[in-house]
Image (cartoon, rainbow, N blue to C red; front, side, top):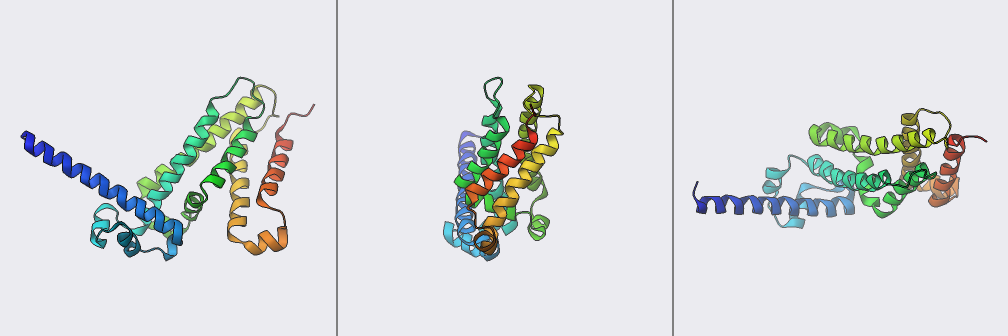
Length: 217
């Protein structure tokens, strides 16, 4: 292959990459604004100025695009948790920091958060690319593994009582997600039954978890 062909191939590759990024940017805006059910491929094509058929050259379905945006959110979450791996020896607030880091991620990335958890719908999962979906699940597992290791470290220093660290990581994950999703999707529950704002509810939840985890004197 001569130099001219190499340049042409490289230019085509860059154009394809730029088009893929443009499609993802448009899909992100559409999903953030309209949600999964109301968004259409036509909406995304119109937003990025490409033909609908062009979208399908890069992504097989709306679900493919949706999970691709979910993967972006999961990547942000992993970076949030990876910061927790570097800390001073003997830090007693490891689990509290993990809890607050996840809640902070939600506050800064609410639209990504909604996509990450609405992707659990069976119809979305069934049509999503399984390899990409599994990568997202692996990222979530990596985040919980970091929390597990923080619990294990606290146990080794005598800050926490003997527990199953993996179970605690999952309990924390489920507790935060359950509270947030209830507040996100059920305003009657949030406003008329609970009557407590989300921040206060999260802190109550953290206190209860830590009370059960700390080593008793």
